[in-house]
Length: 218
Image (tube, rainbow, N blue to C red; front, side):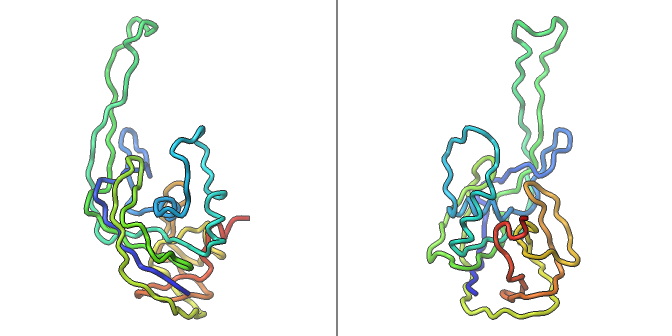
């Protein structure tokens, strides 16, 4: 099995709304593997979409035919910045209620700070050359991708193992016995997942061999 380890470094603040707590919009300290697959250029989508209905399954399942899989990105070193923004207010218009006030509303975005670092892995028929720069998140933030290690002769083993890296449960052929849950859209991620089955070990991390996009879909 072929695997590539990559380090991702943010060069802008990265924002996507994992949790909305009143006026605070928080970004989790992880990067979802589906978002990474789009950002790395394995899927090409038009800049303009006529609706906001996601098409993850239709977009991602063909990547299985190419024999490539991208894991979520786990933080190595991560900090936050908080930015305040204002919402537009249209109550100054003529049809406004007579006694309404024109108070601008605001929100705070808790974003991942520049220079935050993450690690992720690619399995299968990985292209010889990956993009050096990618864009992520709502603001299309710039991030640097650097290949750290490559291994092409991983031999699967069988037994009980724990994967300390992040996993997408929708992309697993079988669910683990135990795991820690990171709640986030569009699909929550798993960490410290314990399995009984086939696995490979690379860079001190054990991974299940059954990872593929929507492997757990029925």
